[in-house]
Amino acid sequence: MYAYTILDQIRKQVAARPESLREARERRDRVLRTASSFNGVLRTYKAGSLATRFTNRPVSDADAGVVMDRRTLPDLGPDGEGELPAELVNKIRLHIRPQLAAQYSNVRVERMKRGLLIRFGQLLTSGEDPSVDLVVALNRAVDDALWIPNLDKNRWDPSHPEKHVQLFTSSTEKHRRTRRHVVRLAKAQVQQFDKPHLCSFNIAALAWECIQSAERIDLALLRFFEYSATELAKHFTKDPAGVSDSIRVDDRELAVKRLRRTADGLRLAIDAGNNEDKVREVLATQGVFWKLLQPQNDNRNNGVLHGSHTNNVVEAVRTGGIVSVAASGTLATGKSSRGATPLKLTRAYGGFRAYG
Image (cartoon, rainbow, N blue to C red; front, side):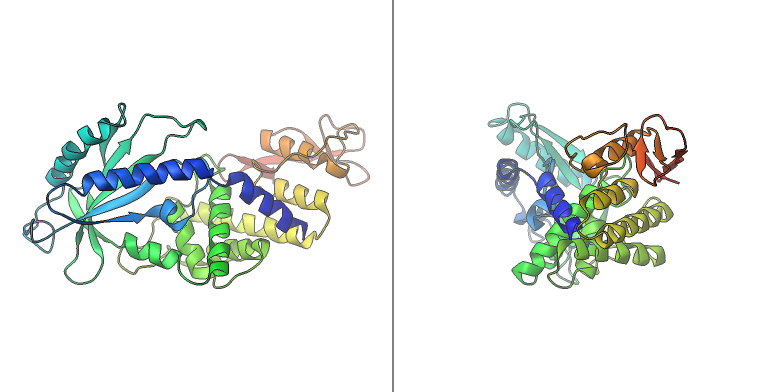
């Protein structure tokens, strides 16, 4: 069960700092209070990783939205006279910016695809500076979902961020905890790559589909990667709320390869049982949390992997150094000794060096 121990260590390692979460919530809530004073706002909502407790460190942003009142703005949106969102979003920007600047002197309020991006320019002691994404939305006439802006194309798109939070935080506490741990660990794995293959929302949606009960974290994470590889090979992930289009992936074939490789590595690590060195070796060489594995005490013996020397192999694999198999079958790093067989390190899946 040593795979469980390592995964739990990594989960704690990537966990967001409580003080950073508090500041992100405070900034989000202040933006919502400020925006709610704009004429025509019906209500506000909270969304995204902060609302679902899926946030890792660093805490980079908080998601929220304002829903406009049709009685005040009857021409707005597809269910009105088709009035487009760009002008409204700019009016809200002009409304909230001076009020926020009274507390955050460096604040910048910028337009983004779905509404406004608020950058505060005020670093925390951790170096984090959480921003807020504010979506400007409309109730839909046909259901309980929303119309949200697509300012890149100046149109309205269907979405249901409130339902996403409801779904992702549903069920018993033990079940929710398993889901949260899976999402956070999966995000940590994916975000090690220079170009992550899945967005956070896609990870959360897949975890919501496949994590159906409380489970030990190593088994649950394996289930997630096996399920995700199988399902994504067949089709893009569907919107859990059944409102928006399926969640797109830039390179689905690449994403499936990475997911399968991670699943294979996790299974091998679990099968290694209580052999700590074997578990670490498998995870490192299979590209599973290779940037996050904690190094062990260094008891070098000419670079040969003994006991806690897995960190030598981790570093060699990570940096593209020399890894070879000695005549005895042990892994060695550094310049190969007589009788050792060098292992070929090939570029695999965008930025990670792994055994070919």
